Length: 83
Image (cartoon, rainbow, N blue to C red; front, side):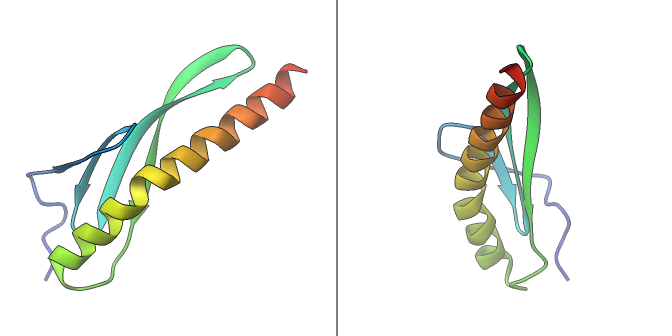
């Protein structure tokens, strides 16, 4: 059975501060909405694959692009709200 989450996080390189465990990754980013910038947390969670090394690899590959997309979308919404 997978230990959830492992106490020792793995830093995921990229433009966002991100960490991963088998089956879970999270990253911090900023979003500006109506002139106010706030931090938010993006997460990728998966129950599969069962192999912890593969699960770590999967979420590590996904977290940076998911966070980038989320930030771009949030900033697009924020720009529309400011108009």
